[in-house]
Image (cartoon, rainbow, N blue to C red; front, top):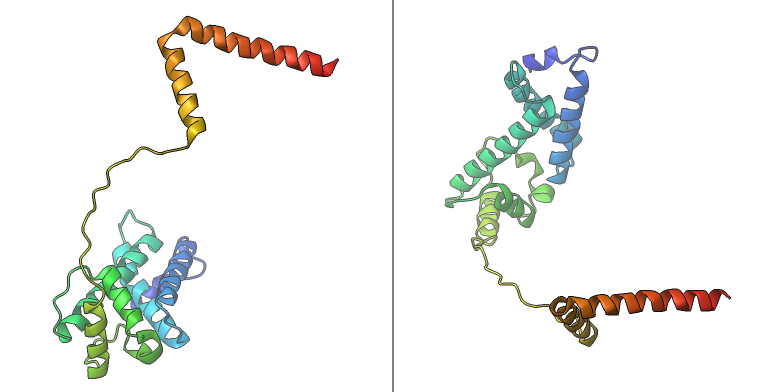
Length: 190
């Protein structure tokens, strides 16, 4: 927390740190952390870690803070799943999904980012929900198919093909339509 003492309201980078605070707080709110005291403690910890990396970094405070928040959450998921005895792959999305499926925000909110040991009931719920978030995704191949727009588009397509084959006939057709349109306009305006 000593690093947070450098972030004072009148400092030059305070606006950046204020934005960083809001982003990290919003991230944890999206994970359904509702306890205000826990939320403020977690945000302060993340900002403290980001402040340590801030000196000499070309990245903004909010980018560093979000990187730290995501890394802390990911590593916590890894420790929880290791304790639950689960081999894990992609921790980000599957871990967050398991968190919601286990109903952690409502039942074990105080365990979020806690170093452990965790209740056995919590570990079992995380294990069961993490395993049900699979299977691993694979890339699908999609081949393009022709789009059928009906008989009007077929007639229009054939007309344009004829115009492409016989350009003089096409020009005659286009000029006939053009002069016919002008003639109809003159007739209607009289």
